Length: 356
Image 1 (tube, one colour):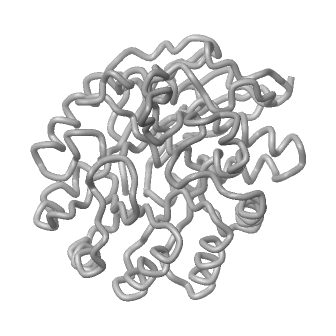
Image 2 (cartoon, rainbow, N blue to C red; image 1 turned 135 degrees about the vertical axis):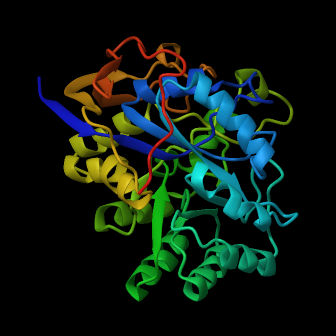
Image 3 (cartoon, one colour; image 1 turned 60 degrees about the vertical axis):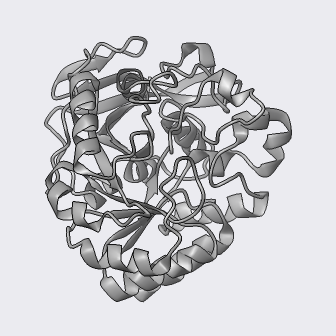
């Protein structure tokens, strides 16, 4: 058996639910899924109601996640169209970064006004990243703010050849940016919607085979810095409803999918480690605790079975896919948190990540 050790895997882009959406999933259930996926830590987005846009909402989330998370964690502050820049300085110590939703997505945090975005960039003097949901021409608008204010900006879930082109040029220019891509935009295309239906609906939506090819080029040549799941569980009933929400789970399938790509010769194992561990820790300034790692059996080939996943939603767009590479152990601070079958970490074992 060939075993790969990956120290301190981090997913900087998850939606753990809980709070007003606890019927979809909880911090306990989804951090269990993270451990089963090999992750040490996850960084949770702010658009689960009550939206994390002020001190009171942040305190509510910090209390609940601190009491129930099984893996280590961080949380973002969300930018608000009502202009919550006054909240920035008072929350910096407790958050991992700022999230700005610049294009339509789940929730009510859309910030479309470029003047307001400019004020937000001016007010954000923390070294912690600004993470943006920006699509198409909006990417260029955000790059103009990065050019002006020189704030480290992470472009989440990039999904098109055009966007990769914009960001490749921005890196050549030397702008302080990083780029994330999701497995669903690498392993699925818009053709899959006809068979998967709403179980393949997410924001940004699935794109063409040509876009997928451009994303893989960016993964291989270094334009892409991070593979992030955009883990966003909804119940099966919600997905089958007349108005299904956008979002798919991914914490337990990201690493097997990427290691399958390595097994097939698409990228190297070393590159996978950079994308899921080394780079996110560096970009977010995270300190990995001693004896915190995942062990993966690189020879294990199996079929993804939604019934064996730990996420509360109980489904996966990758169900039925054959993958190579299975997490057989996850340790956090020396403690066995996942033994390859069972999550052993108790609720509240997870700690808030340390940033430097």
